[in-house]
Amino acid sequence: MIGYFTRAGNWNVAIGFNPYERVFNNILKRKIEDKDFGIGLDLILIEYTLEGSYLQLPAKPIKVLPYSKKQRALSVVVGVSKEFGNMSDISKRQFIINTTIESVKLVQKKMQRLGFNDIDFKSLLDDIQECAIEYLKLPEIKYISTQAD
Image (cartoon, rainbow, N blue to C red; front, side, top):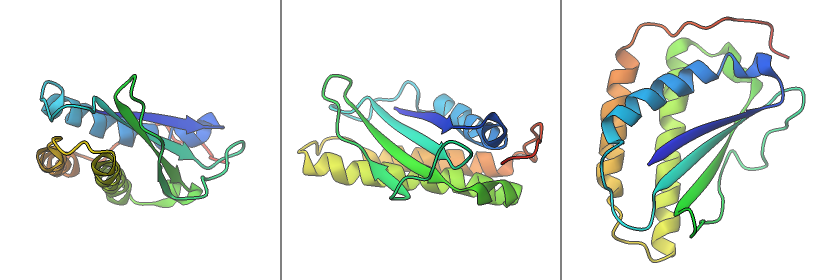
């Protein structure tokens, strides 16, 4: 139901971000992978765009792209500034959690405007909150650090 994609113009920027997204994604997958939240939406793709050498931040911090009927999916673009690298471990985790929740809420509004009112966003958001608690209890996330641009 929820997938993540990271777009970065520089690998050094991505290696400081990807572990945070991947760990939360794995926890979330275990919780919601086989659940059915309703008809009309199979995927919410959260696409993180990391500011770096070749990519600028999107004009809006979070933007919902048009609904794909064929894939029954919505994509949400989330801008991530260079300051992410200077945040504490817990702040980085909270950023992933908060942007996931905000993205789902924006998708909920869009789907309701499109007439899809039978999707159980409350259960999805409750599951995300449960996963967030587990995610925040994990030991510090380690990754290979290099100088980001």
